[in-house]
Length: 638
Image 1 (tube, one colour):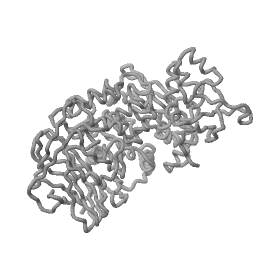
Image 2 (cartoon, helix red, strand yellow; image 1 turned 120 degrees about the vertical axis):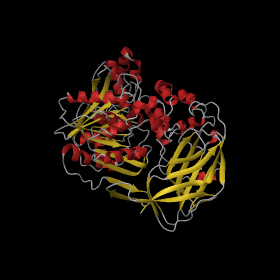
Image 3 (cartoon, helix red, strand yellow; image 1 turned 120 degrees about the horizontal axis):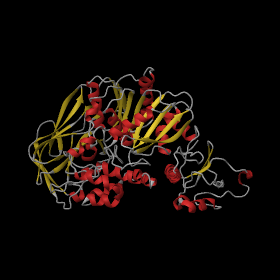
Image 4 (cartoon, helix red, strand yellow; image 1 turned 30 degrees about the vertical axis):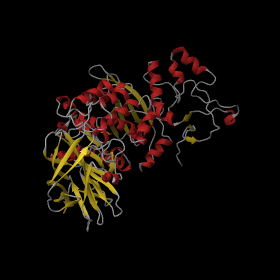
């Protein structure tokens, strides 16, 4: 079977897909339909619209088509239909004041899906994840009343037959629909009850949308509601990636006796760093806010952001003031977004989103997964190290992924089911070691008892035009223009990150670039590289960005690790780069690039000492690095 995405409708007939352009859809007044034109009229106008011979969004079936017999459950599938099927069904249900929609089954797994089924999409998802054929499941929407009276919406994915266990998650994203079917349907089809609650102000949930500030209490109330349901068997595991990983740490801040396991994929425990990194605002939050801004009203725009690597959002970081540009782009998000821009990293405002204390309270098995180019990798490693040092049953997987890749894939799904089988059901685990990681450069997967393995520091000193084994003298300087910050492609971005060709960076006059001699033997590095830079700037409040790349025999450079730090005084800055397990190959060179900024990773320092998100004026800033006290230290495996 081949899948093709096109502008032409594709028809879903039961479990059969057809691309017959001549097929047409009979008029069904209460169908979950791709168009919301009738629904937009409301009341009597809506009823009249739906009763018309050819209402908007339906397709007229010519006389005699399909042998004169109407087809049942025939729904046109276009890109927009797929993405909006959830939203339209939910909106219609709200207008009717119904708990559930009375329309026929939504083939995309939205809240219209009352009848248990196992369709083509489920078969595809299970096969893509190398799982056995699953079983049918249904999806029902519920109201969950919190302690303060706020009503959250939650979707229950219920398997038919005997259940294997219960999974729970809290999300700001769609709980039903195509993407949700990919994410949660796979577990329901394999026999798990899955309860997905939407956070305040999202997808029909009550309350004001203020992400990251209510989940600690709200998630606990959702679990209390779940305990009252007849299908709950007395034990559950939490599961989820990214934001859904953070909500798990929120739940784990108050350990529950029936919480038996957690699976946290690319999930942070401290969202302060998501906003302010190591002192300067990151591009991750504006990109995330832009995705949130369109996910319920313009879902196609989410795809455009992904395809274009959020270029339109990143471009806002070149404007001044940035806060005004963000307000212009997404005014509906401004009520919560504005506070995130004003309060800098050391402000007590951020205390509620720092769940570091949860790591010290956890006493259940936790599976953690990340990617070498994931923006939350340092936090995932901290979680694993702290849990392991406390003797908590934990495991860590890290692959050659950026954030989206680290958030799910066949390997993560297989390890998730193995973890659930071992710690929720009680079967033997197939995992052979706590650490499962991919060594980039060598392209090898390894199983280890701990990470990093034994290493020895290998120091490379900055020198004019090269990296040297001995300290050099002198200094170099470059002028950083905040209106034209150098572009560093790839790296740990929310969208558009990963490994990339960064050869062109060396051509810029405002980037200091040095490289080692050609390596005569492989050099394998495990751990966190450290840059020590004896640095000064005309405006001491500035940013320093450092990237390590590998240059092949043809001169092509590819990023390996990077780090940044906002400094407020002249002197030696110690910058931790992103952790790596990487083999630099013989015949290649190690390259180090240093700059005063890195588009699109974070906004440029304005050169005035002001908050970079609020600054109106920007001035150029000259940076100087004294070579004698500057070096890069690599932890080389012994």
